[in-house]
Amino acid sequence: MNRFNADLVNALRGIVSDGNWQCIGEKSLFESPCTKLYAEDREHVVLVRTEDGRFWAMDSSCPHEGGPLDLGDIEDLGNGKMALVCPWHHFDFCLETGISSTGLQNQVYEVQVVQDKVYINTQNALSLFPIPETNTVPLGRLSPQEAKSSASENSLCSWAAKILCTADPKEKVALTQEVQDKWNSGKITEVGEMEPPVHPCRKESLTVLQPGKIKRGKGGTLASRIALLHSLANIEQWAIDLSWDIIARFSSARLSTGESLPHEFFNDFVKVAGDEAKHYSLLEQRITELGSFFGALPVHNGLWQSATDTSHSLLARLAIVHMVHEARGLDVHPQTLSRFTAQGDSKSVQVLEVIYSDEITHVAAGLKWFTYICSKEKRDCLTTFHELVKKHFKGYLKPPFNTEGRKTAGMTEEWYVPLVKPSN
Ligand code: FES
Ligand SMILES: [Fe+2]
Ligand SMILES: [Fe+2]
Image (cartoon, rainbow, N blue to C red; front, side):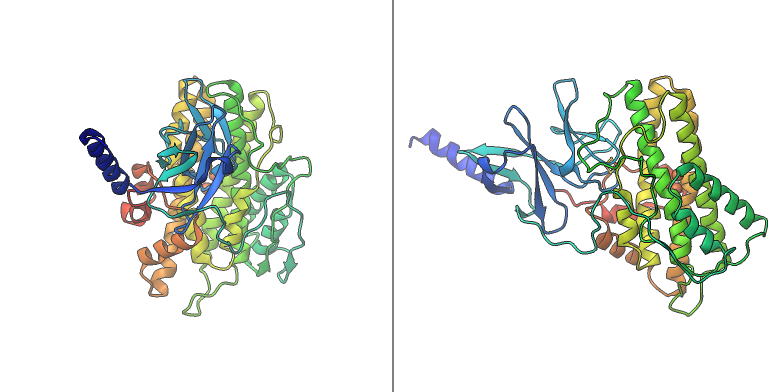
């Protein structure tokens, strides 16, 4: 070997050892478009193989709300770039940069193929074999469940269970508004106790597809706007159920001090339920105005997973559903809004603005009751929150954050910045 070659080899050795290149196996193992690679810290990676035979890698947990990107679709962005599209709400993530047109950003990793072996540059040790997870509920069509009753018929919890068991979203909305009026005017005063159904009911005609099978229109078209509004309406339908579920499931919860939850807790979540019903109606109406209807597109059921994962603990429920997922909704708002603004769809913009200002109050409600319980139980709020998120949320939280919106809700940076992935 001449001097130049020897220097080159040494320099390359340095680059390889300074990086974190690891061989994940023979190229022939990765024929399918997406392969999930499991990481010890649960920030799993998806290896993507595009039709031209090139490989790409990014975190498999969607930066939006943790959807499974390894079940996503590969889509041509039309600018010479390819994207991986999340099956849950169809956010796109450029394979090269991880940047999404929604304003979010996913972590990407360099991939190299050398002598038919695939190498990824990441410090996380990756494995082709799954690490068993507990408490998972398979996706698929939900089945109605009978709620167990131990409350009078006119208690808040009986109504909550009835709404959860109502499959038609229009009826769900109407009942929610009726119960909100009755609660606010004192026609319902008893909270009662009730074990809610394991799953809320859904209309049989609503097509629930496995992730990865949902198609969306190209960005900027009417079809893509309808698809986005449709997926938001689906989120709002689940949000109605999550509000009634927290009311019924934790109606008999006792703090470690022996105290039960104050009346104000139920006031706040009845208000949240009412807001979510309003959001669903506004979106459904807008989809209809645009020439479609709710149910025209397939939806997914992944959103109930976080309810199931946190059904044992009110603190975990408040942390994950209201302080992580609902706060994430605030993060994506500015970009969603600018998409509709750019297309001159001022009516949808108005709807999104109404939803946004209400959602700030929902994050605030989550935070309020989380800190209330922590202070009663003499727990450190921030430490408790960070521990619960690490335990129950798949993956790290990812910037960009809507710092202003989060701050308006009372959620300052010390709540979420420590949950961001340390740089690779
Ligand atoms: S787009 Fe991926 S979780 Fe919402
Ligand atoms: Fe909402
Ligand atoms: Fe909400």
